[in-house]
Image (tube, rainbow, N blue to C red; front, side, top):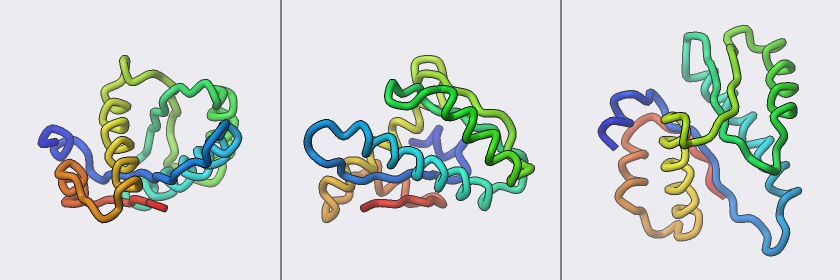
Length: 130
């Protein structure tokens, strides 16, 4: 956690339980809205240009990321590049997976705060838990 605190200015993320069964359409829609909320939050938090890295997901095509990004760049001049990769190749995505895991655990047991989640809360954050 200490290395993340040194290199990450603000933690962003959201978590929501998915319905039972095949939730791919729900996941696709939820991911789209969460991704947009995170982009808006990071642009509010940072005064410099923002380059984004997203994890590859079989449910979401790379072209949908790129098309959405082009639309957002028309509105937000500080929005730089977007890259799609895997956590095995990008340390940023490994940190994002850790944050996502803790948000998932928190949504599952809202009355219990795990130590890693408490550490994330010590720093500026923008979490949406439902």
